[in-house]
Image 1 (cartoon, helix red, strand yellow):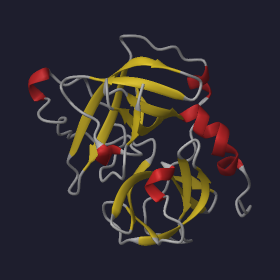
Image 2: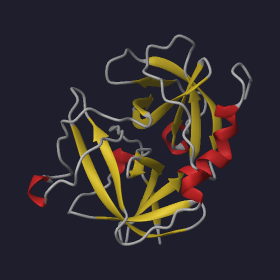
Image 3: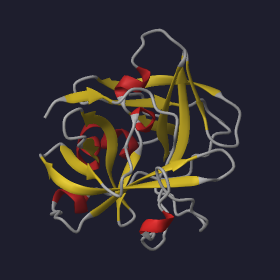
Image 4: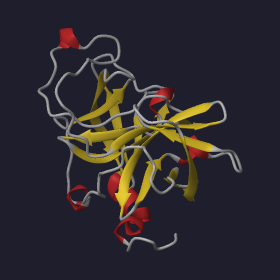
Length: 226
């Protein structure tokens, strides 16, 4: 599998409780969703210079942290801004970087207006999970004004750190989806990292691996420095 990094994205996602859309309703890259969201994490837009990416906020005590792909915020010494769909932009500090795992954390300033209420999820279920042809994974894109599109994917293999997913229904994970959350039955399974050039398999960093790398930072007492 030859991977090409999915570069900075510009769409967001969270999970909605809904039934499978019919083939006729899946236009272009997805389907507009109208039911109230049941977000496991809260989507934000991340900008660094001319690059735009996606991330997801989680509450840690009084602090708000953003999980994203490291390549979205790779440039050293360059201002990073974060914005949800209704707040002004705020400047964020990159407080964790793991280039090898392609994972980063951003810390938002105290009192940030960016939506941040979700606590760190339990990923123990994922460590024991098995996947097959009927496992339907989803990445959901968010647009200003509340419109959303969904991309369905099927299991195509994996290892202890990654899942490899096959794109279905003629939809595509594209460069703008870098860092997007992927879920299965409303549970977080990871973030989009890259797409293989040959077979277009989507490489997803598993959420249990993310938890292994940074979960203690969310479970630690508020006020602890990283």
